Length: 59
Image (cartoon, rainbow, N blue to C red; front, side, top):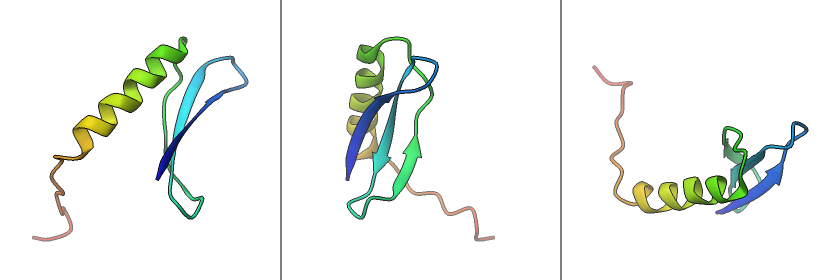
């Protein structure tokens, strides 16, 4: 898995989470500063490791 940072048509920085097979798993909101997008990536990387999975499909 990887994160890719890009600039959108409005000039904002965004990132995508991309699976090893190339599928885009998620895309971010726009950030006015590249540093803000990088901080969001770092936050996701640190928080995701300990995340719980909640299955809302069971009664």
